Length: 144
Image (cartoon, rainbow, N blue to C red; front, side):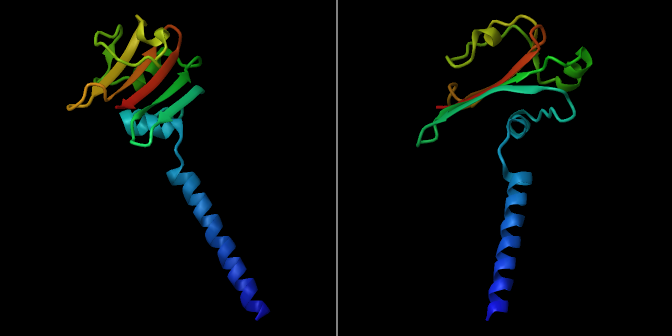
């Protein structure tokens, strides 16, 4: 009987550890994974840091996610590697209804951005702005 309890405990511990490792490797939500899933942009292999992460979601699914990146150690070649043909040069010509995005990004004159809006509701959009002067970037998306 005591041997069975030990085996059951060992199996339970192993299954728990496998579950934790699987979650950490594949399912944990990180700023890098959010950027990759929203825009297909990967910062893997680049030297950057996260300035802030701010998310606010209501029970009905409305809300926003804002992640600010510090790209201070980026070289101009690094920016060229990340920016592809879907990016547009700043300044932003479209009107954006998001009071959470700092003016530093919305009024930027040098850099790139990528804006995608939902077909049904223009309030549902996502934007990734890279300011090459300040070497900062912001990922913002909202669902209303």
